[in-house]
Amino acid sequence: MRNLLFLLFAIILVSCDKNVDNIKTPLIVNSKLTGDLQSGAIELFKQSVLTEDADKNVIISPLSIQYAIGMSANGASGVTLDELMKVLGAPSEQLKDVNANLKAITSNIIGESKNYKIGISNGVFFDASKFQMNDNYKGVLTESYQSKLQQLNFKEVDNSLKEINSWVSEKTNGRIPKVLDNIQDDEFMFLINALYMKATWDQPFDERATYAAEFKDSKNAVHPMQLMNQRADIAYYKSDAEKTIVMPMAGGKLEAVFILPEQLGVIDYISQMSTAGVTKMTENAVKRDLMIGLPKMELLMKYDLKNILQDMNIKTAFGEQADFTKMGTATNQIILTRALHDVFMKMDESGMEGAAVTTIGVGVTSLPEYVGFDRPFVMLVYEKATGAYLFMGKVEKP
Image (cartoon, rainbow, N blue to C red; front, side):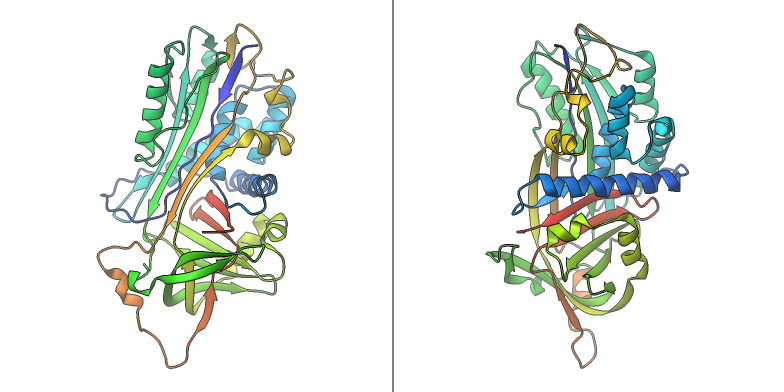
């Protein structure tokens, strides 16, 4: 059987950046379809948490996965298309609208300034001796997804791997230098999305306020961590179910949300999450004087998304019932062979030129409420104009 390799690849980095402004005019985003993407993202996050071991960190980029799913869906028909569209949160008949909306989201998100850098790149690497791409499919990849199309001779394995891994490394600023170490005989195409984000906090942490502390996981095991501390006016939402802080990134484009479950364990809490619930917390968070403690982290995550997607009832795409005839023609039936997801995430005190000292020792005589993330919590990063989730995570041990 002749197969299609489907590679999902995501990079997320939270830190500081010092580049010049280079922001393109954004397209208009469809708010209804973006809401559907948000719902699909949360379902994808829930399933990722349920599929992975309970004691593991889970950091994914829903948006990156949705780009790669979108590229695949445009080559699918019938039940296969219906299944893939679940990840995009929309029915199959809205695929063209989803394509246009993902293109609009890209135009709103990408760019760089002195405070942030966000890049979204799609690459399609294929062996033309094994597969002839349909012109319509090629048009969607280049127009809606701005994909780089590169023909390779997969018989020259070392050269093909070098080309693919070099492209990935370039698009992720070297954070992920290698994603593939082999090409299977029946594989003839790789669909790759790379999402890279680097940003500075609007109110950076002072490194002098970071100290060694303990993080207690869901099984009450204790892990050492470096705890960053800050006193500032921070948007805060508190209920019986959770404590939530909303941390803006400099430039006003991105926000990071940190949720500390109060009654349920973190996995049970995530299983009940919804777009409406997240929106309620972020929209009702009120700025107040707080002391916060966040763990300093650097995590590299690798996932086999095939299991996660199959647990979301995406069944036919990976087997003999797959219908990817809209992609083009191959010697035998086209199916998906692999689905991979790599995520790098770093969170530290980074700010711009000593601005971190501005939050030290400021306040009134009484101490404010302290919100310390020293046990399992949920984290989200989203782009404010579109609401798109760049990444979502469950932190068990930083």
